[in-house]
Length: 399
Image (tube, rainbow, N blue to C red):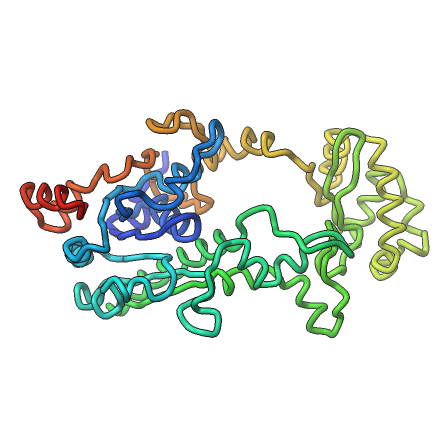
């Protein structure tokens, strides 16, 4: 049996002032890699904790804040800010995703934090960054999708722009924020220097536009919304096709894929059809190709067609509903999804980390804590406060 090591971020202590999706996902990934995450919340709790609870599959707060400790600090009060600075002395990272300038107004800006702990990695994320023309614009996933161009290339050809269904900008930024923090931890380990890092949602989502930007940069201004077709309109077939009982996504990225597809569907005549015989011809005759392919896919059930395409290694997948995905045996077998009994929310669908460290132990699941559940313990261990001092702060609504 393979000997497992401690998780890669074991021993790293993070003060987490983040909220909603962006920052909490970065610290979720750190918790799943073994870091100790101390979530600092206001007395009313962070915004995501306060959202209306939905019965059943997913409680977003519970999913993103498992394996974290909860501390309540009213940072509008000087005593709470002093307590946070005291905690910062013993932390490795502090991370926040407030609007730019908030930490400075609280007296918890770069200079104060660096004075408290010169080895502290200071990390932040916001919609548009701490500099530039858009610095002070309010930012949510929808607004950044609009500003970034994501909405302009999402939707049907000739139709109205649409937002992407997932919170694309929030989670793209969260992933990049995790990468920035871990990079800074590596730098500190090698050089001893503690860096200050930031990620903007706008910058993080921009690379996802590359398929469309390729044609745009070459002067083609017509390629915007392409429905389910390739964003750069440089592949065909590349679409979602109807089946007898649903729909299936199919694409061919090479001539071999195309040849294999014609054989799988018993449509070898397409190989000699002048409209489809070359990649350039298929792209030029996209409408005719999609129509011909749809006529063939309609004759088969999704399950039968998918099995046939897998036998021929054709890039394809059934279009599944969320209920299919949350019960997916593959995702559960790999540990990405697992049902857990939460003390507050009941049965929830918890998430694992997409980052797999095969030689390391994975932290055992710990449900997201009740608001302030760890305040006294953390203030004593990291803030050096006595029981009496903590009681005074509690009575004063500081914690």
